Amino acid sequence: MNRTAIIVGLLGAASFAQGALAEEFEWPARKPGQWSMEMKASADMPAMTVQMCLDAATDKGMMQAGLGIAKSLCPDQKIAREGDKIVIDSTCEVAGMKMAGRTEITGDFQSEYTMVTKSDLADAPEGMASKSDIEHKARWVGATCSDGMVPGDMLMPGGIKMNVKKMMGMMDALGGAGVETKE
Image (cartoon, rainbow, N blue to C red; front, side, top):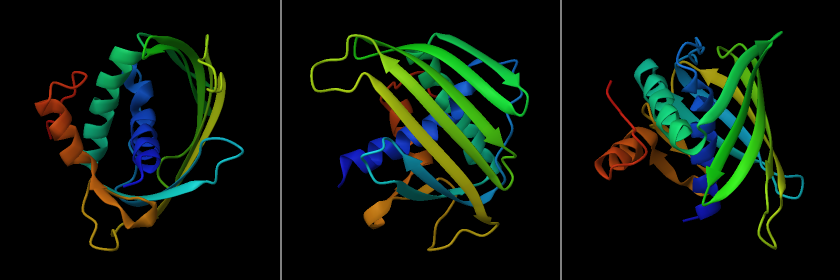
């Protein structure tokens, strides 16, 4: 199993919900159905395309999971609307390292959306980049999910299929990051 694909896929799913930390912020729901999401982590890595099947409950559950992750990793977040963009400025701590980031999100969440995240890792260990840019482009494919996918399924490169709802349930069972998966 390709760990990088799984990690990037989970980060993409969780990063969508990262802005939910500001509970008073009204976050747009994604349109139910199949979404095609292309993630590009750096200029020297190829883009990775993931297919995801969503319904309203799964989208809400992912938002709740992202909220739990965001609260534990990024306690200092500011979210605002700047024109047609949702902007999230955050300071996070991951594995004892401090990271500052800015995410800009555009789109209607019904047919498409784009997230661009730029982050700086303070005192990055040798061999690790101190700056990263991640671009996440999502496009709604249709109301019916293909390839036998059910809500929560993510189809990764190489044909790896995993269900985000089941993974969130496992994280909850293991005491992970205050995640609640109530539907």
